[in-house]
Image 1 (cartoon, rainbow, N blue to C red):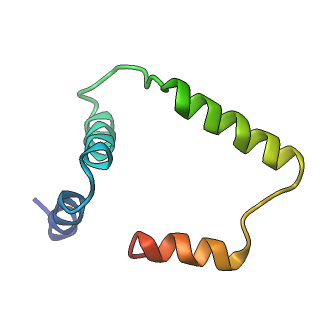
Image 2: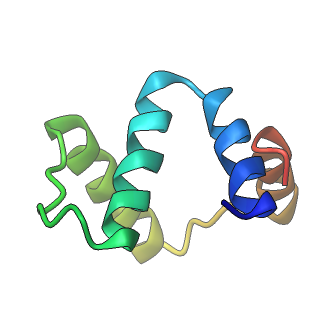
Length: 75
């Protein structure tokens, strides 16, 4: 296993379980071992709709808001 992959896995272990599951699904998809379509929950669909409506109104995150978001994820 590469050192970078090991670091990524260590970082994912620190995330909440739901985020760990998402990371696992992504890794399996990349490896070509999991071929299921992602299913959005009703809550996720509503959030997507809200996001599209905000984009239609040209309501985007500010640079400061994006910096804070990236900081929360250690980026």
